[in-house]
Length: 221
Image (cartoon, one colour):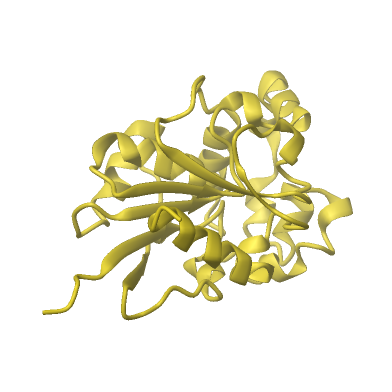
């Protein structure tokens, strides 16, 4: 009898579809890849209850759970209710302290409460609002995969990202981060596996390197 495959679940970034993982390659004879789409938040739903709902989308035991950007925050919250093989975050943060200064400013001033998410929801260029004009060209590719334009979801997820309360890292979390990430600068990140010249969208454009590091983590290489 052959060895059972490892089940690997992916959660995308804020507003992104699971198509952002289309370039991630793991050997099909060893791994089975699953993706989890974003759910629309319920009225007054907190991050904890939302994470519990997301856990219901996992249908195997001892899985590898991977999240990108805000998806990285989500999988860390989900991990509290799961018995995982490995927990991996990509282009994300392990605590509120790793957020860049401009996002801390948005949190402290509560400016996120007046963000025009109803406009963003209908915009073809979500990245112009989410990361600013300097990064817009670099993120044009990622913009193609920003398919969750529901304003309820956007309002909720932006608030959860900015106001995340985690003060210390989750135990045994592996962090893959690009050295050229303009959204979550690596200078604010501690204890990560660096991807040289990787940007915030390296899951798409540096997928070979990211895939290799994912496999190294899973196999303890």
